[in-house]
Length: 354
Image (cartoon, rainbow, N blue to C red; front, side, top):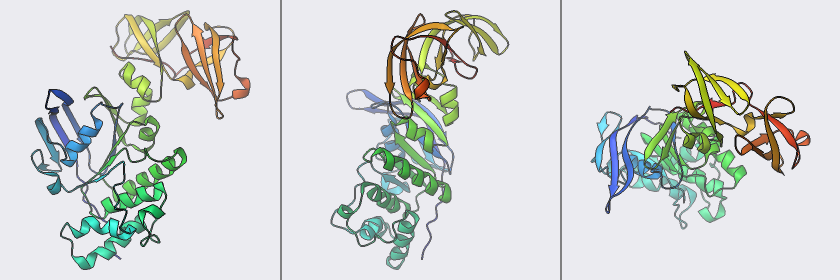
């Protein structure tokens, strides 16, 4: 049986913009570098430009300005059919009248591969996604997750330099999404693929990515590893979009070297300065990194407490604003109307750069 192999390629954007007729700017002067063999996610809300960026890589859209390179080749003006890029769509785009094997081999039949090699490649692709025994089935006889894996196999057998995913799990239920994203990540690692993955789901992005590029209003808001974006957001938008955050006003009282003394309500915190000078500022703190107790802290009152199975969601009123908290111990959670002292343990709050 044939084996699936790839020649992963890097991707570079240099000052790329996409402006549609009527002056609508979907991508605004972005530059980025995606290293070969990595899985990079484009993350952001609807209309931020992430899908347009994916389509620019694929050649389904042409850049209005700037340059795009795949590997050492400038592909800015190269059509989609000549870019050696495969794309897995949100809708799977399987032919309902074709069997699984016929769907997977469809692209091979039209891309110049020797006819004798196609069955072996199809078998290798289906084996890779765990569907070796499903060759004769029709798409209607498969679950949503199995259909998604057929779409992945169809892309893989073409041995693309770059594999693109456009919201690939949005049609699946929560448990299936988790399993399929793990399978995609495993295949990417096994084959050393260059993968660009578009989603609006923050948890999905954190789970699968080597790097995440957060987009907002047609530009890149932040680019970094999942841990960097979660623990050191560079803006209120990124802090709130990646994993949710409380963004609170504070005062930088003094800066000494790389540390800042920060006043928030009655509390004084020692935090990394992150380029801030003395004066008004904002900090972000994750809901699961807020301390509740009695004694010293910001006085607060529980306005809402909701049991959601794995944890309690608690909304607090306080002099520093409304604060949302996740508590792992539902049995020890305060009730509505209870008075609490709000604290911020070390490693919790981060100053947002100016």
